[in-house]
Structures are given as C-alpha cells and as structure tokens.
Image 1 (spheres, rainbow, N blue to C red):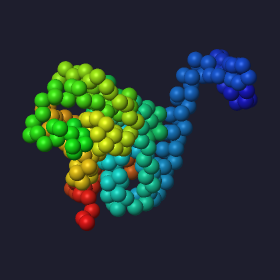
Image 2: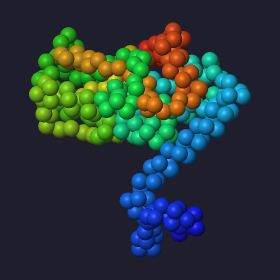
Image 3: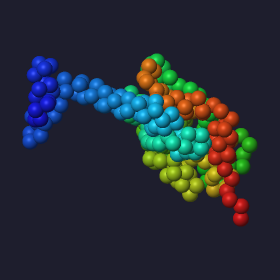
Length: 278
Ligand code: PGA
C-alpha cells in the first residue's frame, strides 16, 4: 500500500483498501472516496482548460459523450461546423449508451452529452436541437414494402432486429411493440446500427431505427421504409449538461452555436444525403 494511502487512512480514521488474495480492493469507504477523487481530478483538468482559455479565448477542449446513433450521424456534422467557427478548440467525441453518457457527465469526464430526453430527476439539463424520427425499415423485397399503410399486426410474425440492451433505439422499439400489442416470435439482438441495417438489407428481418441512420440506404434503395401505422415515432435530440456543473467556454460555445442557422444547414446537408450520381 502506498504511503499516501496509508496517511489518508490515518487522517480519516477509516480503512480505504483491504487485502484481497494477492491484490487489494477498495473498501466501501474507499469506493465512496474514489467517486469524489475522479470528479476532483476532472474538475482540476477543467480548471486548467479555463486558465488557458482566459488568456487565449477560443482555445481549449470540448469533450462530448454521445449515444450511438447521435454520435454516428448527428454529431460529426455539428463538429465540422463548430471547428470552422472555433478552429483552435480541440474536440473529443466518445460514443456509448445512454446510462454511460450520464455517467460521463456526472464524473465530469465529458462537458456535453448528446442523447434523447434527460431523465426527469432534475440532475441534468437538456437543450433540444433536432427532431429524431424513428421508422420501420426492411429489405426492398419485403412483401409490405409497397403498401401505403401497414397495420403493425401484419408484422407480428416477422423477425424483429433489435439493438443491444441499453440502447435508446431498443428501448423505443420494445415500447412500440408493447403499445401495439406485438410479441414477435423471434428477436435478434445486433450490437450496432451498421449490423442492424445490413441484416435488414439482406432480408433477415424488420427494424425500427432513426431515419437519420438510414437516409443513405433509403435513397439508394438498399432498404425500404414500411409505412407502419403509429410511425414515424417522433423524438428529439438534446444537448445534455450536468445541472450546476461548471461549463468550460467551448461547451458554452457549443450550446450557443447549436441553434444557429449554420448548424441547421450543416445538419440538413449531412442528414439528407443522396447516393453519389452514376
Ligand atoms: P442509441 O440511442 O443509438 O444508443 O440507440 C438512441 C437514443 O437514445 O434515442
């Protein structure tokens, strides 16, 4: 055990680590302190950034944690527009599931989250900046692809392709299926939007997915939208921040920037992609 841990234990009068076989593990007190230590170190790093930015406005770091679909399709065009406006800010983007995004914000390892609506606990603020419509897609040769309107019950016996547990898309799909009263006999779990899209395109099943994730495939004709009643399901994307946390300049810059026509144009251009001609 290091001398500084031993000194801290003496100061606090509690054990922080305990022997565990050949190694050591944190005691409950150690675990409690570790959470604060992570946040303190992250806050110190933010302090360094703030000190730098005070002398060199426009410089600094922007750390974004986004849920998968937003990280793959929505955030890159925003970063591109942001970098044109703030070329000296270093941008970091990490992608994970919803619970992880909130954890990164809570631990101050990310300044801004991007995801669906914040939980109703009041711990996070959410700034909506873009609509997110979820649609049902399948292979173009799906028998219901040409229909103007599809009763959801006609998809009751299809294989449903679901993202991994913990993904917002999977949660929305499960809510939708429960709402329309469908219990598909077969559900396949696939761990990425790419895998789900490819599986749907080869005719493995149908899936509910953000229209932004399939704009290219729909316009190229490698996937077809099924016009299922009750869809599109309308959601919104939010910029998320930890309520009461210090917001570094670049993060505040993004919050102010995201509602501007420049970002609106960048998103429209990127999300209504057409396949290259020829
Ligand atoms: P996902 O998140 O990409 O992890 O499914 C999307 C969402 O939260 O709406």
